[in-house]
Image (cartoon, rainbow, N blue to C red):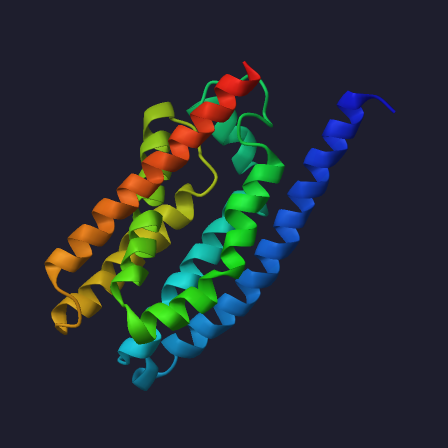
Length: 203
């Protein structure tokens, strides 16, 4: 078996890993989100509302990796001008940075919700900048970017509502949310810098 074939098999295997893991987590997160949304008490409870972010994030990854999928190839070929659909962001790296990270979101939400609420809004900020990227790239290229629909219909209104909910109840200050979003922008920039570094390594 050739090295190219082994590489292709690796890409396909990690794509399937991501699909199974993201799909499984999305089922759990969506069930929890609907349980919150269908209860007036939980919808008004600050200890529950931020869990809606988990549902939105996992549904976004379903659009990216499962239906219609093809996020990695689009990201590489359109956002980074790569001729290789699996580089610089390989399916293995996408699995590590996207799918595996999703496993840690629930414990982070539990700890942050109980002890340090601004951390949740760092995560909200990451999703907000992610939505901006999906929407702006779709508009700029005139091509559908997997993740665009959930960015437009879930992230934009949903994340805005979560921020509004905590702001209007005085649970977080505008300064705290502004700092969280600024730090999340820095985190987003670091990710793109890392991808650009991977691209230079394979050039």
